[in-house]
Length: 151
Image (cartoon, rainbow, N blue to C red; front, side, top):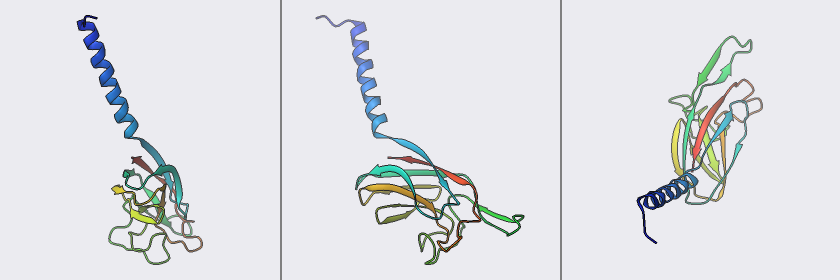
């Protein structure tokens, strides 16, 4: 069979499409909303394997405190309250207060507005706000962060 200019272009197109499909299948991006009023870990439903590289990009502003009458409010982005470290009564002690945090199995990590981690365990990606886990800890919180997760 004689190769024509048309068949060469067709083969190049098919090869290019196969390459793009492979890249698209490998780089899977999902957007997840993390509620600031939920004091526990929130499942993203995204399963990973040990060794997988996961990238996070988060945006938005949440209310992390408000006065009893609701007239005064304090807000923060996914990076939390700058210059603070959470105590034992927080979801993840030792990380920034009110920041976006994550876990896979027993691997706990800071996400903030941007992070790239290597999964140490097989499991589901869980996300949350690093607020106090005492009764009513997130009761005064409002809003959510939008988190893009790429694996």
